[in-house]
Image (cartoon, rainbow, N blue to C red; front, side):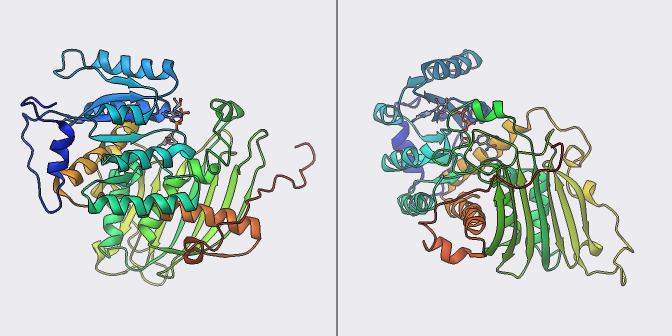
Length: 421
Ligand SMILES: NC(=O)c1ccc[n+]([C@@H]2O[C@H](COP(=O)([O-])OP(=O)(O)OC[C@H]3O[C@@H](n4cnc5c(N)ncnc54)[C@H](O)[C@@H]3O)[C@@H](O)[C@H]2O)c1
């Protein structure tokens, strides 16, 4: 209930009535968020929610009583003295929804369980922010996207986490691409060169399984970069790929994936994602156009150059006449590669996306990251797996239309090893 005795759900429903832009006053109560899944990312969501002036953690949902109690206890301690009650605890989402008062559900369960949670929350008319990727399977991702679009018509929002779209460095590159400053975008090189030891895969039973993780290095770790690639280069139309499991045992999914991607604009990209690059290096995304180039490196801006600030390429036959790095002109110093990043960038990334979601709910606009964006990212990843399995290029539109839904993915793990390896 709010201070003046109104039910929060009624309040949010009123605020999101189509066409009505709501103006909130500081005095109104914070919306109750249910954190569903009190694991690694659930804890990040809880902290981001706590830092948002319009939100509070209203419930923690997890069948694991220890995990749930620990997170609810941490929140209660941090919020000592707050006007609202400490978070309620529930073993299941339906119980939490039945108890009422939840304004937004944050889905932080293993990926293969996203669909059930999103479906239950949207059916209850509650706004949703679901972790990436939206689901393990393309048919489920399609179904959730349709559900979200139907919910939007009822004023209920559903967005998918892609926190790196909100990094100042990515935002600066996107602004340059979308305003035309970089000219025609011609190509990109994306690489996620990480290491995950067997202990990582053993840390939870769902990790590294097709049923609950939906894939490996590309689906779990690489999907952020896949989303950034599609965000910056537009709609992907064709993929040719190889995927393999070379460094791990006891997992089902790929630990190396490489692909070439052709986009509707004609732009071409190279994609590489691995959890087999010891000791774990970085994430790098180079984007190149006819009047500029940019390099994102571990979420910071390593390089940024637009010719005469977009006026046209002036560098002569070899292009090097004015290759200065303009990165520090377009992002704050902390976002330039090499400078020290804040210790809490993980929480801050999620907080930025919560800010977007809250503003979208309040104004009735779509969220910055839609479920259709999430569907496209899952489709691109699935296209890599299907192409690798079939040994031929995959048309993304056909894949999205269901052409390859029945392909059983296989991942090569053989090959000749170098002597001594
Ligand atoms: N955005 C990011 O940077 C990021 C980072 C890590 C994970 N993730 C995503 O977050 C999701 C969870 O990953 P994680 O690493 O936090 O996993 P985790 O294993 O650490 O935590 C999952 C939690 O969900 C709980 N759970 C299982 N079934 C449940 C149910 N039916 N209802 C409620 N809770 C349930 C488990 O008990 C566990 O506590 C995955 O989809 C993953 O891809 C995103």
